[in-house]
Image (cartoon, rainbow, N blue to C red; front, side):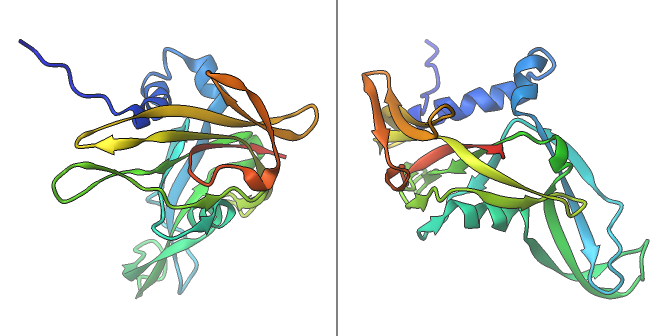
Length: 219
């Protein structure tokens, strides 16, 4: 008999955004609530020419590797959206043609039309035996962050929701429970919500450091 694949409970919430991205043609109204475009390009450090080999991608979310050491979420956002990687031996055939260094950049395409950004932290990992290990590194949600787009324009984004998964891993599966911490737009206060308890008022410094999915909104 056919045995269905084991589902990882820690991936179920992520699966919503994956499914939404893969089926955006059928659910355009929902997709466009979260949609933002990103672009990859390389800039020559000698002549500052930007490579024409660009790729603009519509996204419902962006996925970051969860660090091994504690970090602030604002620093992680700047690292991915505002910084760059150095490419050794870069040669821009449409620029100066010199063998030099390139700056590989990942940017929001147009921040003026970007209202929301969903960030998923990759906390589910595999050990050498292919068993699931959950990365429990503390990532502090620390307020607003200024992001840049491909044209150098900037905007501030603030976190308005944090989803965490509390549970454990066993072999190749996980079990547990989701909770969400939501910013109330009426009183600007945070609340922890769960389907098995009443909402709890939270101070911002008590937000979960085990966030798995974080939703940002442009200010």
